[in-house]
Length: 469
Image (tube, rainbow, N blue to C red; front, side):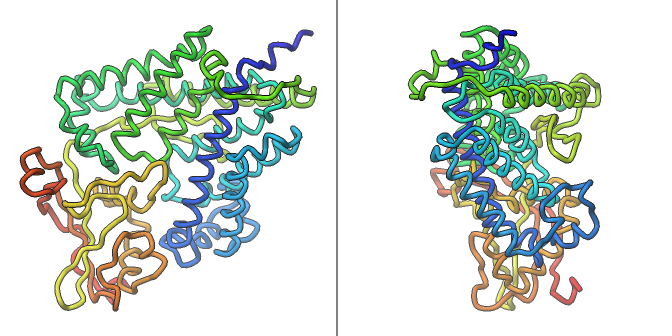
């Protein structure tokens, strides 16, 4: 039997781009865990992992931490992920034999899976499952000296298809503003975490906003089919997706969602587009690798039944994992668009008056320009946005967050940009809700402010440690 189709030198550059960008995203994910996991999920965190592990078995949440958990052990796991992903990014895995190369990528996947599966509400984002699914496929890509296995490249394109086409479908089935082309009248202002250019995007002419929506529908509902077309159509489809994702990266902060979508798009591009990437000569895969890749293809085909059924069904859901290993997931984003931006403003009082806590990413001070955060992920800031939409998102952790502020908890305060009570903790804290909107051009010139805000309600009235129990 002729197996020459299995490996292709024409996609070696595509594999190189996918692997190195995935290594960068893994590095971002593990660094986020190093810096944020202890205050969010540590032994004394806002939603402590030991409590979660006591109530959840291994079958419900496969994780290395079912064997043992301590904050110190978690730090070892997270730093191991940092070291391995940095090594892969630097190209160290490309000089390894095939089995060792696969082992490194398998360890990266297993470590990150262990974190996500105990991450609770802080890790309930679609890009976590997307990284795990892409990372699992990357285990089988092989080092630079082995011909790129085409079934894995096709599976990466299939993953990208589900990301884009699923997102396109959920928009058309969801909010009417996607169907009448007005979604971007609101989105740039009301998105979870605006970036430095979001205000400029918001003030683009409305006809251009309608063009943006039309381009989005074309990119997500038509272009994905081109990923499986002969070259150069597949490369063109990949390039269109890359350009669209870059546009989104400039217009807001979406953690590594845009970067990983760009990463997957490279899988569709052949050497005619990526020939500028130098590669060594390749040899065919050994039979055992061929068998492993074919088994992977069968597994993904079987698991694809659930996301395909979800996409074709009338009650499509977004960002759903159908198994605890986060393989064969369904994706989607912004099936509904909020028309008005509400922000939670957290304040403390030490007896001298109310002062506001500043967050690293989310809007607060109206004179502060929205920062560029992505591809780094500020988990607390994102959850605060969800709480402003529905306070139920904070049910499990918001009281503990307020209690931590009343104690001047050093670990939790590291998640914030500024603590207005550096000497001693406040006596009371409260959370007020404000309506935010971008300043007009005239207001920006006159006041220097990026936002205009008006109070709308009080989410949490003034409380003390005694009130919180």
